Image (cartoon, rainbow, N blue to C red; front, side, top):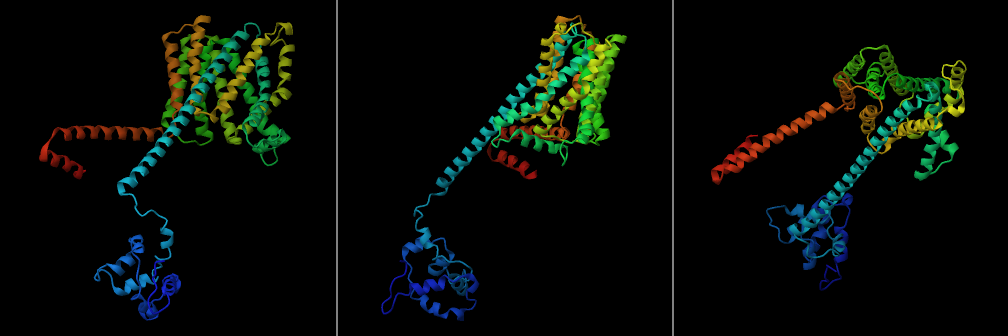
Length: 490
């Protein structure tokens, strides 16, 4: 193809090609080893097509048109014969399929730039869509948390006007926790690609309690204490609603976030953060001011103490859960909450019965029980716990906590129209202080680093803007020199 037949002999392209295609490990290292090939080089004639195709090859350029002074003859010969592992004729056939006229630099860069720009725009569009979707779900979760928490609080207040039994209401609502794992499994069947049976899923979630699964010892040592804390948290909260208005109850319960930080700092040795200490101080100050707003009456003091006790039990529940059990997946959390419902049915049922026969929480007949209010409160509380535990799958945890704060103004508006609450200056300041402390506790641990970076960027932009404005004022060669000097000086 590229080698012509010579007069007076057989075609020598075959032997030349063999000599040129020798692998680097057997390549000659002295000129005396390649004397036959050197004698054949003077008969070698290369077609113009091959020259054009191999124009980028330094060996062909040196062989045909390269100046003698640039490289030595020995180096050129050793490169041709494969000493450097370079075999141009072995790849010439493969390169014949390429088009002869390659596009210029501008033509080659334009499609590449367009493709890169398209990929970047597609990536930005995908990221923006994902962020918008997560933000949309965040708004929905915030509204759901706010509505369910405020609705359950108001409905409990309405229930106590006809059914004065806070512990029985707590027991009845906690029994609904049994539905957590069945609802989770229904979602697993609808969403998961690899569907498992109830028994398989149950065994997999039981690994959360250890290698032996959910044994009787694990039930009493790891589930029963949390069942007691759960009952105390809800009972103290509901009992406080009987004593004081729902606005004060909801805003004081927000202090549980500060108690969680203090207990985590002491028990779990979490990172110390000055801003969270400030938030805890604000929460305590808000509690004192809230007590002062009603004039330190015994009725309001008992109600405030009950809410603070409920917030403390909630904080203790969260810290002990992290200390003893760690973090749980969705299925494990659903199973754990269902186990709390089972514990409530088996071991807490006797307490409402005792309270009924001792007439501490007594009702004349079962027909007088407002079943609609009881079931509505239980459904709202179950919805609140489901969204609070599983909402992290679709949005940010901070947004979910924000829904608890937003329930305070909702309860305040309802109390303003349904009760005789007085929003004096002290109460308003206390609500603002506790809300501010709650928001400070939502700041991430690296908030100070982010703030420093933001301030640094703002300072850099402010410095760049006057420099650009001063550079645009001048004109002519002197102004160009003035513009050039500061950039080099920096």
